[in-house]
Image (cartoon, rainbow, N blue to C red; front, side, top):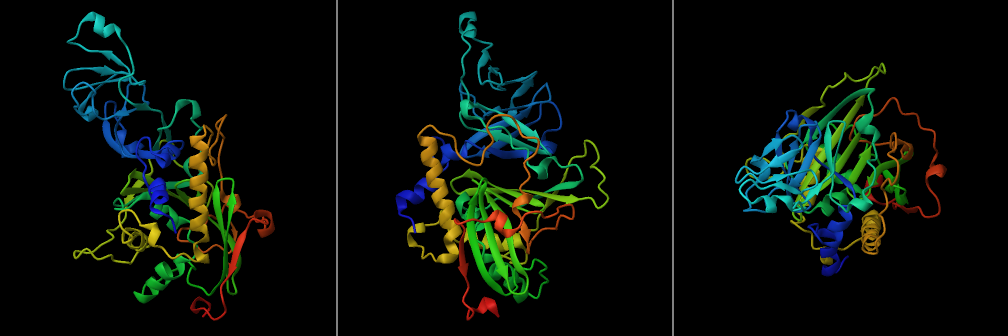
Length: 407
């Protein structure tokens, strides 16, 4: 368990907070390209406790700035896009991509010659139908990693959209590194409801383990008669990568989390995606019924129940952890370590510094028996064995033969 001070350290994400400063060192999805198809379109964005405006500017690029004009506080969501700049609709103050005020129409010529940064502005990157933002210091800006699931062209990509979660981001990310909850929360709940579950999570469970790797934490497991498997990657700091899906747990603020979910279906014939075809956005079903009770009939409603009923921010000082929570502890340790790295002026892990990679493909860290909530990838050919993935730092735990999950 954590004391209250440490719990606050890991859960507060606003400007100038230790964890917020760490999270700002990574690229986060803030919108879909299809939301801003025309010149001059604007969209309100809230992320890491900041209220921003995203706009499609004249070059076809994107501008991301703080929402409130520093003159009188009006929203730039309703501003006029002029070339690569945005003009406040209240009094016409004009801002460029650097956040500098380059024109104040009703002020003197001398005042207009003073060009200085007056609003926060942030870099953006568009990839695979998603818009990403980097909110950290410019000198430490990492290259965009070019995740394979966003740039592959040998299939069809789509986005799954659900209502925001009313809880802190860490609750959902800790769920991503919990290898044992899938047995009861998912498979056994589907069984109780009389629903089919093809994931394989409900088979007799023998052992599980955790190990750090370059991008975060890789999990291991062994199911009776199915053998060992590994993968379901917790990608630091706030992602989950499974075979044909990637999920971002985007901290909107301290008590709201947005799941940005990318799913990729490889084509069976290897044909490329249609050029310029925007990925479809699929709305997931509601997670609750009319009485505000969780439906528990989808993976999403089951996970939402688990993390939202912990409270807006889980009080981790009241936990009672066991060996099955080893991955959760590892994640917390990594966060604390990397917060210290950033505080000391260093660069955190699981980023790309230098030249932008052609592709970052994490499927090489998956193999063996893969119980999965998503579709398999028939184009993936496993080449690495268990011994190629795990070393002496691998923490593995045996489930007693008397346990109910062995029956």
